[in-house]
Image (cartoon, rainbow, N blue to C red):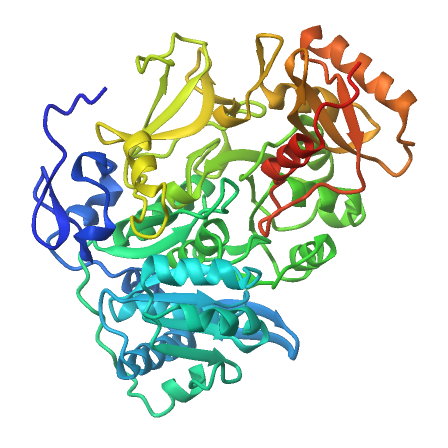
Length: 584
């Protein structure tokens, strides 16, 4: 599949690998944590705006996001708006830099060294931004995590990364304290705002530190962070990314959205997840704008932020948009909001949600593709802040990325036919190899000839736009025929009785699997056999009749993760455990 005409990487010494074009990839990571060289992605930075990735000069993400922005725009602009328990908080860029410098110095004095991994277990507060930037500044590798993870998950992540330090919210310390006896590499525990496990607080390590801390001269392809997948396939996999990736994806997404130094960014996605992390740290600071930090906001909180804080750039999962649309403010309020960009990613955006948003707001809701193994959004339907792709198309790769659609035999899929998405560009799949039993094997499967092979199928229309077809591991095989759940979900979502739906397979003694719809109805609808029959008839009228859901389950709510994505695997496992059920 590769057409570059050369071997991508060869093993070198204890740390990193040498790419064929001379740069050292992950030069600050011991070689034992990396996949075999032939299963590392070929990182390419073809867009003219990404030339810094090729520079022999250092590239530190903290400097690129903070120092460079201050040099360009000055220190007095607002960087962070936060709604906290004690009231609203605003920090300027200068205040943020001062805290970052003192915290970096404090971490270094505590014993954190360049290349060390630092696990961060913090809510969406300004101090979390400080910690991540400080870890980058001293040359460490940040490991963001969710405050909702249990002791077993914390233990796994700390041991997998061999973290030397943990920064933890004292309000979320219980599970960490349970995990600590089984995490032998953790030598430092830093709490906020109170002490955790007898260690110092963030304020204590920063107190009295100098106002200058020179950034570590990290190279563009040195590791910046290990971002964990949601763990929906079992243990979460650590995904390694570079300082160049942190900056490049910020630049590319800022350009796609038409963001400026006057932009105000908002997302409900948590900062411990790769999606929320980029939206709340990388993008706003690189743009010179500001971020609104809300910790675990509901739809009412999101509307309040939109109406009161001047939000211009919003991103989130389709579920959050649906929840917001269920209880919107009056149209005379929404039509005058300063919002100029609204992005949906992380799960399938359905036509009714897109249509209702368009009727209410002055800016369209658009599709984009991003995932933790690729660090953030890398396919977008916007160009320069204007929705260019039609309908629910996800658009095209951002500049610097290439995308191919592969047939099952590994060749290119015929035009108009769905194929597995293969990507290369400034980011790519690099799994952290250590405690996860399947990470090495997944690296061999998911990285081929330098291309990152994703578990999503798309097709490309005659104009070159990409359209989501389905996840490869979600395909339902019923009676020998394949059904993409997204097709059935779109059909069901167009029925007025349906608020939310997830389509998954259920075991069946005759057909092997049956298409099963798990449905949340609108407030005015009554779940039951009569409605199920109407929904089945509606699907038969909308798409090929063999794709209709032979089984419909009504529930009060669908299971979701911390980002708001529907957890399909949980539903599949529940149906699998229940065994064959009634199908019609």
